[in-house]
Length: 596
Image (cartoon, rainbow, N blue to C red; front, top):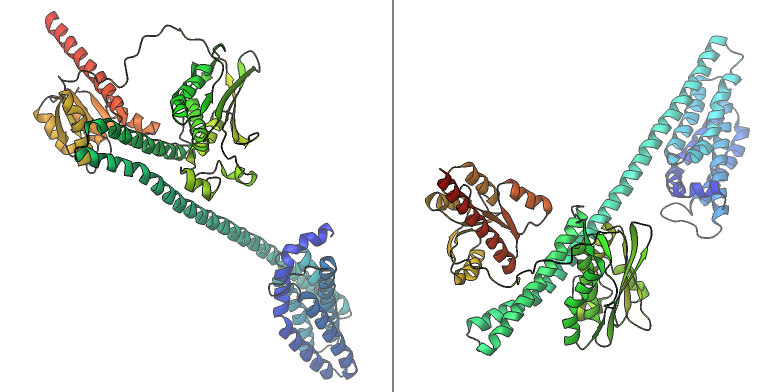
């Protein structure tokens, strides 16, 4: 098919439908013009006129029918289009040429009839050819030529009248062309708006479908750890045997970590979609970070009877600059998936590093599992949020499908790529490719860090905990009171300010999001006053973990911040820092009094 015919394809259906609607008006016009021929005494032309008019109307009916009323021809398409164009031109030529005989009759009513037929023909083509310039020109040109012929046929009359007629015809054709141009532009804008509306509607429907799927998946995935937490809590409350208490507590901790991981993936996905994810830039040992990730999962592999093949221990350290936390997050997701899908055999963790230049390195890290593998048609779904390779996979292994999505997006934020391919002879291979700047080696001698699980000596602390949820206040009491902390609680910001006016505290644990007076505003008012606690350390406590939310807490006057859900080790560390701040403040005051 020629490019010209191809360009007409999108507009033929609309043009055919419009011409289909004009069948009855054309039949009436045929009868009217036959009567007009009788009036001017040219009955001899009536049979010829009827034959020509009915013939072109029949031809057009046959030609447009395959395109009209929702149809579209599938065979001999080029021939069908050419036949329709021929019928369109033939219809215009017969009517535009036929009415000129009335123009030459010299009778004003019949001359007006001829003029109206030509004007009507042009306007009909404006309507039927509004979508296509070519269709408009093909249908309207014969009528326009007949209009231009009228001043020539009237040349023998008064020169001024002919001139006015010629100018009128010219202005009319120009006006019609301008009107068609505006209608054509409006039509294109309308069509584009409809296409955009359809696209947005489909996106909205897909988003609603995704949200529904997300809600179903997240609800399902949360029920598993919640069931474990509730079951473990009931056992402890019922007085389970001492030998089972530790196992029950470990079950609750594992379930809580599972829920925390799910929430972390959801928050990371939301931050990435909002383009609010930021990456750290610091020097670190790449091999050390990879080995740390492998070491974290080695116990799980042994418990499942698997072999975790890690990079050789004799490889020298490779120092790069980037975000080690996000790199470990990607590797943890990949190793977690590999552990989930592998029932026997080995999981391989491989790394290859090649210098690209004096200050940049190409890094390639692979995780290969020994699971059932991934079908080719499922590869595209692997990195789609809340989607998995198949329904059977979702039922058998669970999960939200967010881990791989977040991992790929993090890889791209780091300037790299994460992809997958089938393994050999089975399983799947996930490959992370990065280009990283070369880093500076840090001092190998580092101070020994205290155990993260050990609780600091907090017996001397007097703490005010502010939270609008009773469960959170009870949780803080459960964690802190056994350590000897003197704990006072308040349900909102106003009650907290009243307590802070009445009594001195060493530390304030301040929930950030509370109804009424929130934690940030309560902290601002505390700092603005000169009461007993205007310089007391305030630790923000919130589920809002975005960078701007944490910065807003510090800007309000909070000295520290920890995230919800509660991590006991993070709470201990924050209270330990606050205690050091209190002790330093007391020493500074003592020195000031001694100097005075």
